[in-house]
Length: 76
Image 1 (cartoon, rainbow, N blue to C red):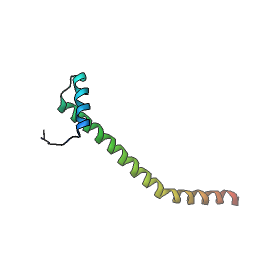
Image 2 (cartoon, rainbow, N blue to C red):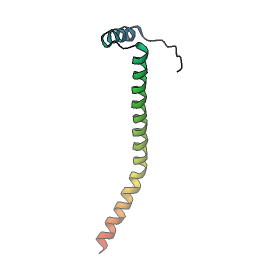
Image 3 (tube, helix red, strand yellow):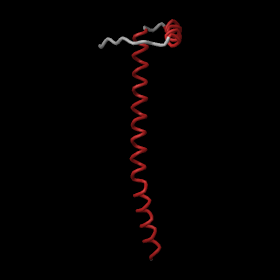
Image 4 (tube, rainbow, N blue to C red):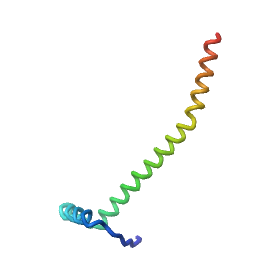
């Protein structure tokens, strides 16, 4: 395990402490779970962005191919 020192806004710290008192969960565990959740969210957003970019790249080619197929159908 790595040790990390961080500065937390006072309001976030106070709210976190209130929540932890009710949950009876160690602060370290709570922060680890929060970071893990945020990392998973960010990975999903990165994948979503990459898929959108790749979809946009092939969109014009797909439309061009579709148009060619439609022209072939109309020739018969």
